[in-house]
Image (cartoon, rainbow, N blue to C red):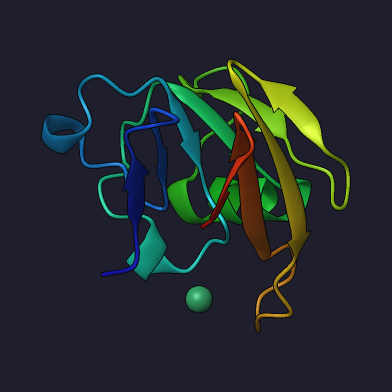
Amino acid sequence: MNYHFNSDLNICVDYFVKKNTKDIEIFFLTHAHSDHLKGFKGFDRILYCTKQTYNFLKEMYNFDDISCKFIFNEIELNKPIKCNNFEYEAIDANHDVPGAIMLIFRKNNQYYLL
Ligand SMILES: [Zn+2]
């Protein structure tokens, strides 16, 4: 399994299949390999990923900024960001695709590495 659903944070990472993620608003994508993009076609909610990953998506799914239905939030590396009721920080995953990240989430002093 290449995806992570976290019910404490109410987010989903690297998984987009609509029927299984009905109550999730916020999605994170660590990188643009197809095994992390299950269900992405027609995605229409909130996406956090790096600019490089977003650019790969653009090429892969052939959308432009106008017809694109989801809301893109750019992730910057090594910078703790507040989001809803949690905080996250992205670090370089050193994977074989540019823009790949690992994510550390924090909520009420609980840490989640996804
Ligand atoms: Zn990969």
